View 1 (cartoon, rainbow, N blue to C red):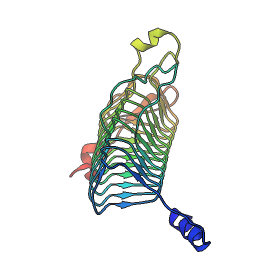
View 2: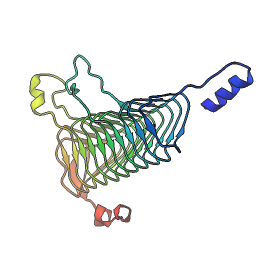
View 3: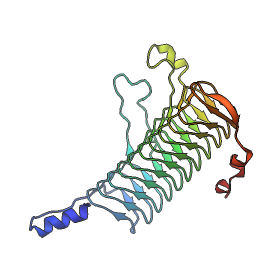
View 4: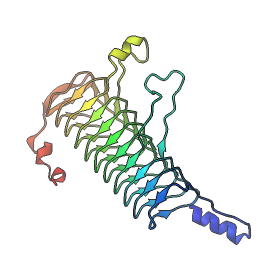
Length: 270
């Protein structure tokens, strides 16, 4: 049952029921925007033409949303980060406003923090969390319940599927594929001793790399261009370009066929 049905029920029952939206007077929404009920839009927000904003959406101050963007129910955009007493990575600093470019889709319950930039036609699916200072390239898919921690960069036309975890300081280049349940790491010391900060480093996926389901990749590892990691592997060393690795620890077992290289895929050629 959606909010329109709930409202109808209350009205039919004879109760006095009023839907209230809270849109700051400095916010600017294009006249043809469609907005739901119980939305909150903060100071100096800008929303472009033909956007659709669902029920119970919160858009924090200064967010910039382009044209033809869809934001589904209960999504939050522009949220400021929290800093726990023992947080090692979250710094208190001024973040630039969140930018959502044309044609993006933000799913139900998704959270996009302040300081993020989503390029044209990005999809952030239901329940995903995109932390501060994350950049996502055009036409990339961020699947359901994916977590992208702060200071992560994702390239163009990537597919990052359900429940993937990518920690801070990681980078995924263009055309990469990451199957469900994959976990990157960035801390060899598991939170002990100050020495760990000298080695704190995320994972790097080079152009066109592919990762099977439930893979774990240790901190600082570089996965080469067009490399393929088999499902369930634990990657403890860098993976050479265009090699297939598998196992725990993962070892090279073959070459990626030439017909599977990114340069030979029509879907990546515009």
